[in-house]
Length: 537
Image 1 (cartoon, rainbow, N blue to C red):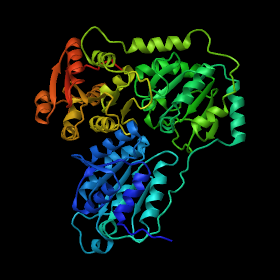
Image 2 (image 1 turned 180 degrees about the horizontal axis):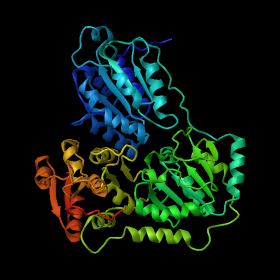
Image 3 (image 1 turned 90 degrees about the vertical axis):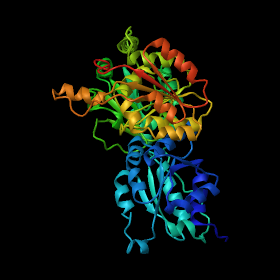
Image 4 (image 1 turned 45 degrees about the vertical axis):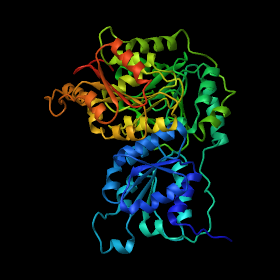
């Protein structure tokens, strides 16, 4: 039996490369130099970013566009602490982020305290699992961690890597990849009962979410809905599972009360709700218990649901694609009568139609019309995200990337950067608010250094508008939400890009056309003014 005599870091790199990793993102520190070398030896490119939080979003964007296992590297202490937000985001947004952290050896930690704290204790509440590598079991732990990250609902896994383990030769027997717990067909008895429930439905609706995206079930969902004339509602993360131009597709939902006014009456008319990989972690409180006691609810899910957001009468624990195939020959006895679905689709379109005056609506509609169909768009958190998610039409899955569950700021630019790395021939656009751009301005340096010619559209209203709207609605005084304007044209130039201000549709069209022909990033600062989103969503 042969043993592995490479370093522990080499084994880490080999395991990750075998699982599909191509890049690792992070900020170096002395405690991860050996780890970085091991990743590089395995063909995993280390990509420098300006903050660990951004590194995690770069990794997620690359995973969405190219399928590369997302890797984030942080040095001990402040590096690990900086990454807490993006790791929590990966947990809530179901991203299989492998978070590698450098640490001092256990014996040294007993007498050396500078920057030393218990990484695992901090990480355990926000990861699927936390491991610490040890001599003789590096390969075994890596395969266990990778399998855990990718099984069931994907999610982040933390691996603490002591310096000596990374740098010392590791006499280990090579370990085969651990099997992953992938969902298959649900219990036959449960499937048969669900068939009977579905077959009696006259007004069924399907709601699909992030688990269907991660499984790649868009084709199966589209075929099933079209075969049975079932309208589809998705979460924001699941936009594009069905081409949003399809007459049966009612687009994304979950955060806009104006959309809910159109969709909730349909939910009330539905006699069967078919949930396909729907995780309500993305949804606002209005989607808690959204159907009545007479509605039959069938939940197709890869994991046991313990969220408490709603009830389900039939739990089909299994693959969305395989389960829909198992239900394929079940035809409802009736159909939606009249034009209820067409009317709802028209009402949604009218609700978010662009007014004649310049503003956020005009920005989103203009850019959707001006850019290629396969454009990847990202959206930062804020008022602009809610409106953009209703207006921007997706024609395929993963066409719109955002922090949908944690809803964290400063995610859009690094998500876009990672997506562009994985899909260099596609146009990539990031929607950000001015507050979000200022929070993550250092990411512009990463876009420059990695040669990523994305378009950054910043909606300039000089306010944390979503919070200001909530503050005003609760009749509180304006406090801590408005701020001064920044010169984004000069900011773009300072970081090696091009910036332009626009205040009209024609100027936006021209700026967009020019941006697509540049080999550097472009900031388009769309000045819309304060309170531009009043009544918008």
